[in-house]
Amino acid sequence: MIIDNSKNQSFDTVKITFTGDIMCDMDEIPAYKTKTGEYDFSDIFNSCKDFFLLSDFVVGNLETPIANSEYSYERIVFNSPIEFAEAIKANGISMVTTANNHCLDRGVSGLTDTISNLDTVGLKHTGLNSKNIQPSGIIEKINDMKIGFLSYTYGTNACYNNHYLDKNEKWKVNLYQEQELYNPIYRCFYNSIFCVFIRKAINYFSRRFLFHRNIFCPPYERTEKKKQFLQRMNNDINALKNLGAEYIIMCLHAGGQYNPHPIRKTKKIIAKIAKFNLDAIITNHEHVIHYGEILSNNKIIAYSLGNFTSQRGTNKAPFDKMAEYSLLLHLYLSKDKMIVQPFNITFTITKTISVGKNKVKTVFLFDLIKNCDDENKRKELLFDNLKIYNLFRNSDEKEIELKLEYPLKG
Image 1 (cartoon, rainbow, N blue to C red):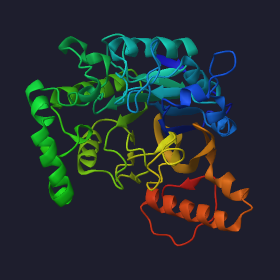
Image 2 (cartoon, one colour):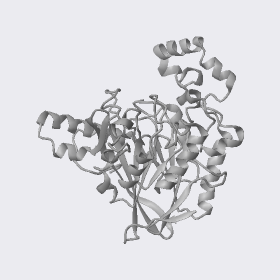
Image 3 (cartoon, one colour):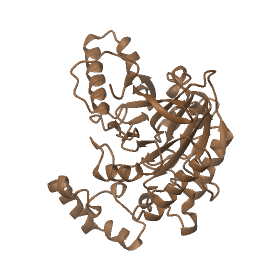
Image 4 (cartoon, rainbow, N blue to C red):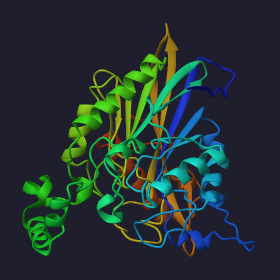
């Protein structure tokens, strides 16, 4: 289906913005409950609304179900009220990607509820499917350009929540490999006390050399059977092309947790997917910022944009991973002779700050620095700004000008 989403009067260019992970911890939910018994999450996002309105299309990674059941009650098992989706929509985010490791935290019924509730709110989405059809992605017509969006994930936390999809249900989630520890025999061995002890010992003594091997790594960094899943992904991409998509963006959920750099398996799967007929791969899941690059064939890769909103690094650990920082990635596209291509790629640094018990707010680091009267604090923020700039650009600059948007290259 092609949806006309033209916003600007000029049809010469398009600006598409991507956020990192949109999280909602279990203790945030009661913190945003109003006196009437409803919820209001607008304060989390409203500092970004005016800036988002400058983009033609904004895509966020929704890392929580919006299911009609009990809200979050465990640290890594999420579920949020429909008002959370309403706040996302009301503050300028056009679409969310839903294929991620938390999409089955409330099972298949929660997946169905999430699709229905996002439709009710009017928030576009891709990654979870109510029908077994291809392509599972969507094409948005933005300023006379047909942009294709797909969302795929490495897994669904199945080894933790035990929500394994039946063989005839796999199409409900866009997976690029089998669910974690899908083999019950291997699952039992992997979780045995002996195996846990061995993994911990090897992790302690020789992570650098052996941790990339399946048996020694956590489930979310494992490689599972993927041939048929990658074939489905490739079919999705080709189907979007056949429907007229002029530029295709893959929103990928891959990697580990708080690693300082992309893990070997993330690089490997991205290298494989980059050979498909798509144009950009925007990756999330690590909860910290990793670098971006432009390949020789002009394909764009972002390995992790960090947490767009989360209590991590602010009200909750880890406090030493810069998890409170995130990036907004901006693709500026133009169309010439029926070919859509980027003419500029920029990024904006955001920071999640604490605004009360279990409450957070996402703001621009640029604004924090500009409005900071404490000289020591200002120096700290400028240091973080430079560090993130160099991290994402994979550079080693000693000093940079303070800007709201920085170029990825040049």
